[in-house]
Amino acid sequence: LGNLLDGKSFMRNALERIVPPDVDATWALSALDLPKVRLRRPGEMLRFELLMHDLVQTGLDPNLTVLNCLDQCSRPNYNHYVLAELIRAGAVVVTTNFDRLIEIAWDRLYGHEQSPLRVAAFSNDFPASLPDHCPPTLWKLHGSLSIDGRDTRDSVQATMASVLSASMGVRKTAFLSSVIRHRDLLVIGYSGWDDLDIVPVLGNTGTTRRLIWIDHFTNGGPGRVQNASEI
Image 1 (tube, rainbow, N blue to C red):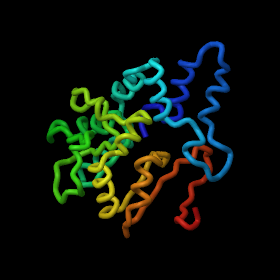
Image 2: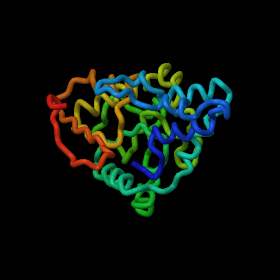
Image 3: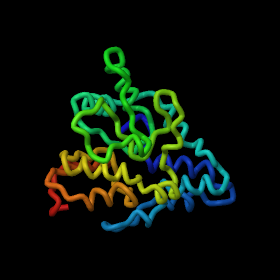
Image 4: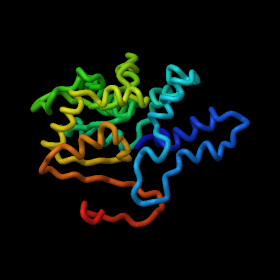
């Protein structure tokens, strides 16, 4: 969605920088390859959270400074401006990203006429259910590296340990469930590989609202629309 590397490219760049010179880089990078079968599970490839966990545990990057580039990017693209407009129009925008690009887009569009966008990143920032009225808010389920210049790295769930220990927390889970029950859900730019927290909430929350999932193909083929039974 942004002027940032996608998750797989980010991991590839990180691996290329840490592979010892006596190790075949091609072999190391093969850990990112998806199994060549239609049905597969996240555990069959190297997860982002596991790579970040290993960087911390091995002492290569105990403070995960590798994530700093996400916080330093200040060039929103068209999609971020659309999301900022949707927030202003009353949509509930939820993201698993740590960067500030939606916030920057909001500030550039509306900073001169409205207060800064409220950002919910810590568990206590999330109400147990979707409120009827609240100020324009961006809901960041996996935390945020910074908010309004304040370091909020403690909110970030980037390692396997942080995801497993928190599992989004009771409040974030309850909030996301409430959103799914009361709003149509449009999913854009999301892989669906968060089988430890996000996907279980999607699967376990009963709702009569619509789920529309945009899957981006990179092969240049024509787009198609399928319902759940066809997929």
